[in-house]
Image 1 (cartoon, rainbow, N blue to C red):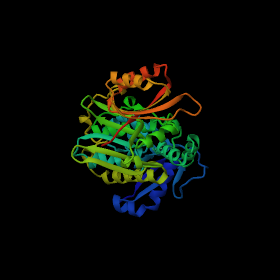
Image 2 (tube, helix red, strand yellow; image 1 turned 45 degrees about the vertical axis):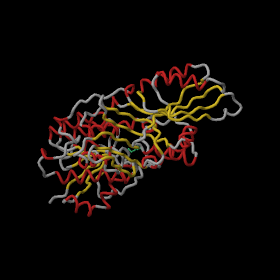
Image 3 (cartoon, protein in one colour; image 1 turned 90 degrees about the vertical axis):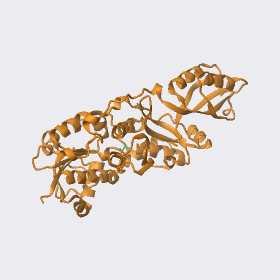
Length: 436
Ligand code: HSE
């Protein structure tokens, strides 16, 4: 059989890693796919840059459109990232009847509904395993391995850069900027690293996971996102004293009222496996009604881990090339006509337990005032720590853990607590999940 010809768009961290893996493991990959797979063309913005990959035997160009318009190319790997020109390139490839493999989470989260509609109309496949959790085959696990289940919730560490920063801050007391610089140098961070540290990248990935878990449209605009920039070293220390670790999680949960889609720092009990996922590693727990909780763990970013997912998609596409398009695994796990527009809850309607840190005057009655407000909002306290007064000051930190409550009630209580004359500054609030 003729070899399958691949055109790679982008030779950065992921593109370079993909070229290396496809070349190095060519024989093993061909044994799995049933056909030889050859990269014949690749595009890069700057053709003179030093690369991590060997481009020998690959025709290079700075014009990616010449690849998607090349009738010789069977599969396009979009590894440029960002929205434009990635979207135009993918749409052009689809129009030209080419299958596409992409690692582009932002593009799938924001424009995936349109892209999949167009691909289905043209009978081509769009594969995107590398878009979520780097090398972990989480899309395949949910879309295929768990297809007998009603997925009830999933929770994951899905931004390697944030996890790397939180781990280094906790274990080595390194400062935020310093660790972020290292994550950038190692190729973990996005081109705009605020996407990592403000929770946007995790929001893109959660959008995709929720869609394939629940059979709902991709809707990034309904994801609540909060990053790690407000986490202080004190919070890390107090969380530890209470038996918890702070992790940046993406959580998608089906409740009787609707679906919660949220990304935020979260206290989780220190004995949970997720609490022990460190560095750039990602992990996702998926809970199904039949299987219970399942855990997927591995490298969430980096050249070859991400390439591993890209190449697995290439193999899947090659295996399906000769099959009937009607019998392919649907892009979003559920048949396109069975996607349901279930209600997505606003953050006010989330239900969560909380960690609160307040700075209070060191005088009688202050704690009573705070607990009165919480009680008025039906918020039960699980634990309280009152520390020694801050050095040379008349204020002291109070740390509380609450039981689960409606976020609307918590917001109202926090706003009243912040108005007390005995409380200074903002109440620092972090959600808490037991993930039991
Ligand atoms: N910037 C992303 C991360 C890369 O840190 O997880 C992988 O998607």
